[in-house]
Amino acid sequence: MKAIILFGHGARDSRWREPFDRLADLWRAQHPDVLIELAFLEMMQPSLPEAVASLVGRGVTHITVVPVFFGQGGHLRNDFPALLSSCQEQYPQIVLNATGAVGEDLSVLQAIIDFGARAL
Amino acid sequence: MKAIILFGHGARDSRWREPFDRLADLWRAQHPDVLIELAFLEMMQPSLPEAVASLVGRGVTHITVVPVFFGQGGHLRNDFPALLSSCQEQYPQIVLNATGAVGEDLSVLQAIIDFGARAL
Image (tube, rainbow over all chains, first blue to last red; front, side, top):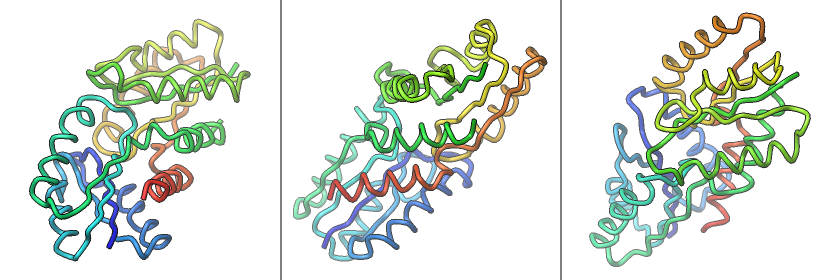
């Protein structure tokens, strides 16, 4: 069974996570055959290891982690690979992959451009 | 003359800004009649006041600021409105507006969902 984890930074203000909850709802509506979990680097729950553990406990064998970040700075270049390796070591029986940051995707960038253009 | 400012968080790692530079390039290619500046809350240049000053110096009279953030936490609910008010006070002759965070836009969220789905 496959799953996706949308991995965000996290923030002190609980309202910060609203778009992430909307993403999870959209995913469930459009891809009901692929489980989804949110996970956060800091200040919000669950952590990435917690989300992976939850999915493994539900029988998932393939997990793709999508970093919902714009840029690839220290968090994605240093913290994230270390976290991911640690999760893979803990569950060697699963396939654990990661994509680049969503901000690297041209369609995401184009959607931002279009949003700005509509606001003028 | 109109302009748009894409306003991001900023990060220590200079590579973090690559998607922002791509956004600026996309904007210039698609909307050459509307000037664009990037601006950052911290750790990167220019700041929002610097970007506004630069545009006003080039004769811009209408500026729309688009926060390129996913969630609306303390930065967007507290720091950003204060910065924006300060800029407006400094340049009362211009029209200075702001949109919500790009993460509030359904098309942006859908592009993220589609990016994740293609990665499975």
